[in-house]
Length: 141
Image (cartoon, rainbow, N blue to C red; front, top):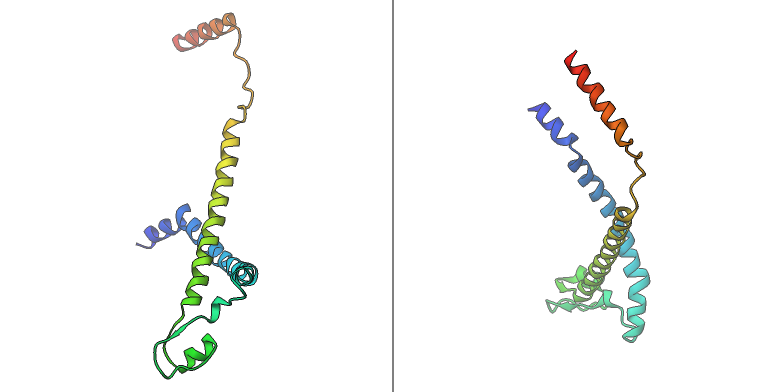
């Protein structure tokens, strides 16, 4: 069972998946920063200075705070502004992945269109015939 487990772990797919998850985790931080620090301020300016992160609906009458963090400390809230930010995060991430896949596909297509490495020219017909005769004589001897 241990050798079976070892061969399972050693397969390239498992290692590739692990690397993908680690890179994805790191990439999530980049996308979160892109959305929160770059995109959302512009979206806020476009829609009139709105900061989505503090948009919420209190679910109990005990919640009277103005910020999401303070409201969560007071009770249950429906944080739809945070949800909008997460949706924008997802759309940006999906767009970036789409562009990356499109770029990789373009590179692969260019690689396929490259002319094949020049293979040596086949020998003339008389040399091929002499080679065949030699090989037949070797097998009979």
